[in-house]
Image: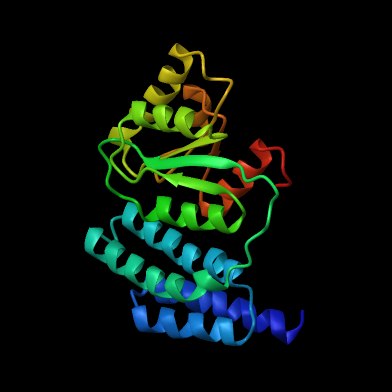
Length: 221
């Protein structure tokens, strides 16, 4: 392994640590160094900032971290994102696939959803972001209105998981189930739950969501 790869991996690790340790200034200065060194901005987000946010999410699930810590971790993540985002090399596609995404009704946690949005956009998707606390019917209405390819649903809470099932039930009622692919993700979600409610796929993190969306649209994973 070359020193260059080694250094780039070191940056990813340091970025991840900066997010976990709630260090905004460190996340920002490391991101500036990533850009200055000509390293890949998307990789730095995926393997650095997003990785740190996932680690913070695990600490939250284990009750080592609570909402205030999680918010400070996300501040550090955004401090890095603001610097790296303009340097992402967007993949040009002649026809952009559209994906409607949002956080299901009853949940206002949107850190994960925001990360998925940034990564999908940088991978050439057109993202229609509904935001958070969105009623199931609204996902279907917006997908029909925009002629989207995929509906992406997110939640961090077990209490709102049934809202994902509602979206799929509405699609079935309206005979639209074959028209849109539905992908789901978030803390409590599993592949088993996705299969149970009839979703077309599940992703455990933002990079996984991009791979899944690409494969469902017939592109390379």
